[in-house]
Length: 416
Ligand SMILES: NC(=O)c1ccc[n+]([C@@H]2O[C@H](COP(=O)([O-])OP(=O)(O)OC[C@H]3O[C@@H](n4cnc5c(N)ncnc54)[C@H](OP(=O)(O)O)[C@@H]3O)[C@@H](O)[C@H]2O)c1
Image 1: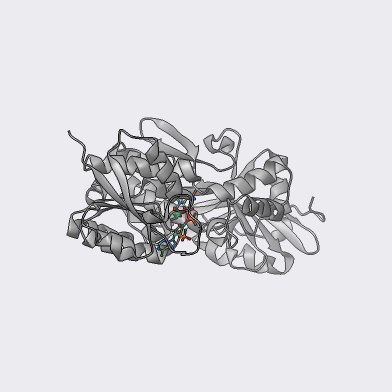
Image 2 (image 1 turned 90 degrees about the vertical axis):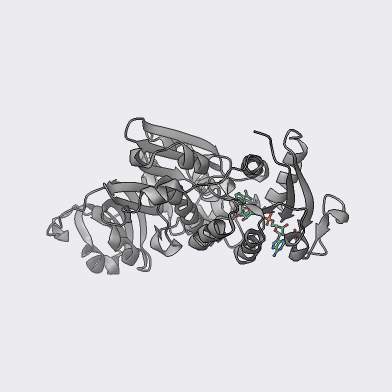
């Protein structure tokens, strides 16, 4: 099969955009050229000549010599307008923008169908790990039971530092910001939203399910304090922000993002710093484990490059599982074992949500308990001031509620 020439209109020349420019210089076998680059700031100094740049998106979007738009900007709303117009104009699109894709997934599917042009986005989830194309092409949906991953590099860096270097959460976050791994307003990462957007994209290719961001509940790492960090250390666990999707029945899939205690025998235990890792569980292979850098100029640009290369062979996602899996439904009917930290005045309210409480430790101001509850209660509990939740494990079947009498439960006056 002969390769098509790819004439690129590039949007964004920041970390990933410039990374792609450099990576393309080093891959001459690929017949791909950047014809024009659109950026925003007219006063910024650029590492290459001004003749390459425009500030008018339409110059690129209406350029008939350009057959492919590579969208690498940091503004999801502007990105959607660019991608929409590009597809309408019959241009193939490559993007790394998970927020934009997650917020407009259905509309983007429709646009691809209507205008018969491909949209590829391997870099949008786990950067250098080729997980989307593997899910799309290799895994027959019936065989895939679960997908569990560390999909956000900045939170993993922060949590790794707290574990390895004994620093507080606040100090680790500051360090991540200084190194450029976390934004000055880091809530997209630390609140678990970025991981949720990626999980939404992975769900579409793993199980053929299309959701809206609000359908997937995300708990971030932003409420974690010394108590949880010390608990993890004492038990020999690591704290990780984990995105998890799994079958809860023949035609049911559940998914969520939350901080987890990860044990040493878990494949994700050694996925540290800005690395990402994904564990797939299938009927016949048991576990398969993908690991690689989840951020950074070259690792992300390498996934963008792979999409550009795929376009040169006219590759497009077929979304086969969406057709095959029409009966698959999304639900949150499962229970979880958690460690929950609470202010003492909230205990009476909190215990009502639990099916079991196994241990409880409390001093005059705060306490923590370990117990099991239906996942559907987590949202309400997490919204209580001062509450922080870490998942210990998932029980795929809902549990029966037992009579809970806090006086029967082991109490301590001091928290370590
Ligand atoms: N960085 C990573 O490791 C990584 C990993 C995976 C995915 N991604 C995704 O890749 C995308 C780019 O991230 P990045 O880290 O490269 O961002 P970045 O370093 O902040 O660069 C953003 C670029 O977008 C340009 N831009 C912003 N708004 C624009 C507009 N309306 N029109 C034209 N250009 C515009 C900026 O122009 P100026 O230069 O004029 O300011 C800048 O060149 C994002 O969607 C991000 O989520 C990044």
